[in-house]
Length: 251
Image (tube, rainbow, N blue to C red):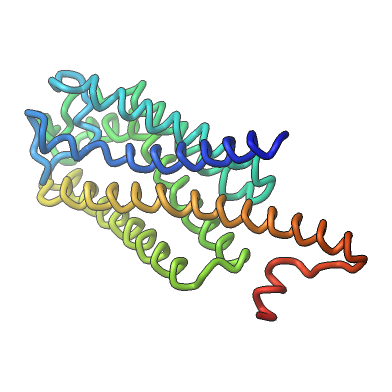
């Protein structure tokens, strides 16, 4: 592959990852579209539920975002030829977002609550959309851990790693609070602040998705190019050049 094609493929993968991450927070359109659910108490998935006036808009954005993350993760895996533990959960996450859009909620969840303690709750939380959301959440947690470890292993700048880790941990903590509030909703029918916490968590997750995997890909490919150039230069001079990481430590 020529240098021009490699550069184009690299930039395309990064653009897919950044755009897919940002589209993950498409719920913000709720502030400009006249939807019929409360952002403080409702699930984000209810924006795409059957009966919502702009469900096609949110489903389409979910389809686009999921496809971008899926293709971006696959192409990043192909280009980097490293970190399968990072790109695989990213592909799974993108696939889950696609499936969520294809299998929306049958109705607005918090507007039609079954009686607490009845068997209808189990039917609600075990429907395909709920199971896919559970897999999606766990895929993100795996991705958060593996990507953070990969950035540490490749010796990425500490300050940026800490900033991304902070965003990722806050997103994970928001997810835990969201799960606790969902449990409270199932038990006593109280959904207060559930939507607010979920929207905060999704926004943090989208920010992390747009930045962390993209940065890992950029650092990996940048150091590979540097090592290749250094090896070519050393071959001309008749001696072996140290890897990029060793050069950084020496300098």
